[in-house]
Image (cartoon, rainbow, N blue to C red; front, side):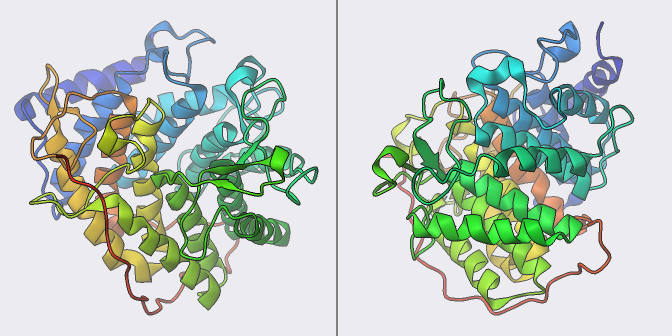
Length: 428
């Protein structure tokens, strides 16, 4: 059975794409232009999803090989954002179907059939999507017993119970199951995601337990050396060596995950200087990802792999999460708005220029800072990164994330510390 809603959406959007064949036109100051560009990119992103055609339990919600389960969860999170920013409900039905199909027997996004590729970070990306649905007014589920936020709380309960005191004085392992490679690695994406979800749950519910764990998990990340004094976020550490050293690889999405968690706590604590300083610290550390190159000033790049052309399918998508969480941070910590807008407006313009390939002339590439537009690299990650960066241009017109308690308000602005220098290698 085909998903009629999504098929109709594809048919309608095909007409939108036709006049723009050859490139995506974008005026970063015009809401109509931003929405049109976002709709084109979203359409091409959703073409990778085949569950709407086969509609069987094994294909609903997930992406075909070589994409892993977690990236599908990330994609549905991007589609929740798409509806929130653009108001276009074309993909709401299929997004809801996808998210609810993966909650598992205990409504906590633990899927027995994905035991081989579900780590703490993978589970968390589905939690990000559900948490955004709760915060951004996405239609609540009409089936099942749990609301969006209850699904995230259930997920959180599984992770807090996996906080591992067997080494490194705590932390989450990368993997959930001993049989999976990486079980002996405690990494930033798993622990940063737990920190961010704890912060968002604290803000949404007002529950002190979530705040306590957000603070505890953040402090652990610092104490174990995953976050250094200049707010560099390193990839991870070996718990068989008691986390005595770190992998110094730096990824965009790790910075973004911690940045947004800090910004949420800045908001929740009514503008505390400590969380404001930390938010600004991660923002300044993110400057390394933006390249001042010719007329592509501030075009984001994945410095760990993009400039040497070694990115894999997972890594192609990382820039999208930095954009997602940077845009979201402007609402939680308003003092970040000017700096983030400067970075991401330039990145959005560069991303749109890079969405000029393929047979349809609007397929998105990876290298946004190259002098030539489309680089021949295409896939889910490339589409999603462009979508998150461009649709976020509408953030100022969007509603801030809601809460379940009336006492949480907007945080006051605070001064911005001096920025650090930017660095990102240009192509040779």
